[in-house]
Image (cartoon, rainbow, N blue to C red; front, side, top):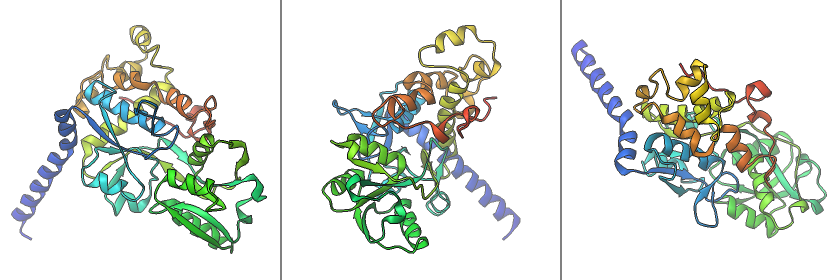
Length: 338
């Protein structure tokens, strides 16, 4: 290839990339609404309330992004997506971002050309059974029927686990969490397997939750997080740093309730940059300087969002565990705002 041709191709590629990186932000602003791919209904993570408004741990991330970009956390259209169509919907532009308990893997990142911008929940796959099955370990499920969502890492992990332990199973395939729960409760399968957080969410919604146990084995790593289209770098930065603003706020003790008083009294340079009082960080991602303040005000910091939706005080009752801040033995950690 001639040097001039190469340079021309490089410039063209750079221009296309530049246009692509701005497109989602421009479209969201022009539309006046963020379109967020969500679960079809997973209590505590993403599900409509009695008024049809989506609530939950994952839903709060979408609301924070809407607040950062549009100035209004309510300007979100939630699109419920099954596991089979979630990535296609994102790639095709049907949704602007996906926050739907989706696992970050090598093939999804590279082969599907998706960008997982952060991990908002460190999880692992588990098993739930009825108490009267008399099983205390997943290794005792030889010959069992297992309800499993198709098109998921869960499906692959299940096959690996049973093969590694030289035991057999019969899959009962389902399209989404709601169907899995119906089939399990109806007795169509002996066990229901998905992310352990999803099992806790499902059990909390069952009429007789105490009749169901989550077995002790965690058979995989499931880093769950927000996803955007590959190559849309500016949009990826906006979603990534909005999430990290929520984590940084918890690190700094900033809540939705005390943010105004912190802003007026702080001498911490990083807090000032985070809240847009100095540093001009917003311009670097195409937003104004108050973007992070609005994101935090939407539903609170990361810890507030966790506790309000899935924490120990809810019927789901999840401990922070790996999702505690790094200063408290967990893995949640925000890069510096500077």
